[in-house]
Length: 237
Image (cartoon, rainbow, N blue to C red):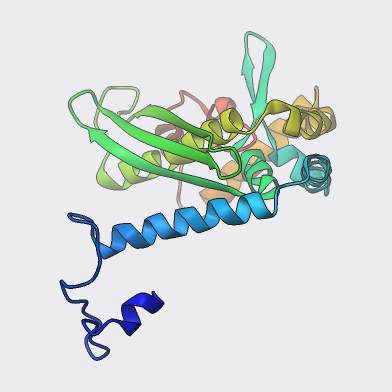
């Protein structure tokens, strides 16, 4: 940016930059700034590499900060009389923040009203190694009767899909060896605790009811048949 300020073609009053700057042909200032930021992030990451052992311990410490934190790190769904569990969106957020030297993002890339789905994409980039992982998630935007959601519900569904896509990208990009110990510790806190899951779920449903949100609306937003399918991170998966 200093080069821009020093240029005779930079107008301090309007912020405009003249054409005589040494820009690559066809490349905008915004693109060059983004490239510079990326290069700086890579240089910084390699100058201050992560301490793997410290990362592993920090993830464990934050995950097990208290019982509530541990519970939020695991989603659980009853299937065939047995709970199916996995790392939640909240857990992926912890792992990414403690891993450091990385970039995480997610967004809705398409709302397909023909196939009646919303498509979200999650991205994870490790600045130290150059590894990039992407993950796409598709969510239906119709209720159980096939009726299309209204715009607000489509936005809610898109946000849920974006969160799940972010989780998938992060947990595929960061080696499992980094977060396995933390996840297993969190799982042990709630392992077999079906009563706790039911109590948390019922509490959430009652909390939404105070704002006029019925169980039917909750199920429609999460694309599930009943509130019994709601997991610990609220994603309905």
